Image (cartoon, rainbow, N blue to C red; front, side):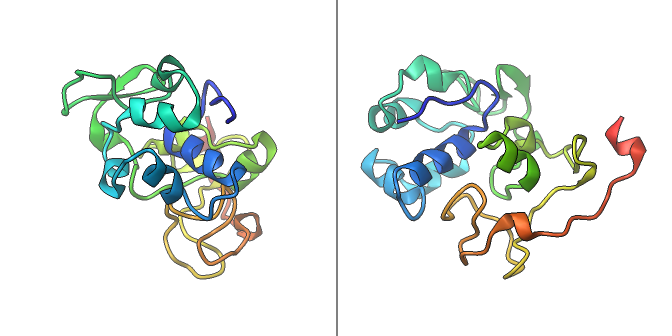
Length: 166
């Protein structure tokens, strides 16, 4: 039951937690917590349910939650910063496979719609599997593994302009 990293994506944490427990997808974790699949598709995820199965304090999970209890459905947050829901990519994940491989987790800023490339590795973000060409889903085998079993690190990503990095 690893703790979330302070800059980790909530959905990425759930994926990492299920991967570390040997589950084929996060669905096992959701089912154990008594959560329905649609609860993952909203910024108002029930953190107390996740806390009960992750053996992590609610306060720890609230730090990476997309919304706080009692928060208006028209607002949400990312690592404590107020944003509007359309600024999040909760249904279509994207990431830098190099960053995930180096850090061992998916950072929360990849959940933002405005992120189009990795400023560290200077390439576009991965949003589709390099093998099956299907959009990435949160319900997959692991941080760097597609539902089809392909290694996401095998993707060839196009470079981004210097103006996008700075």
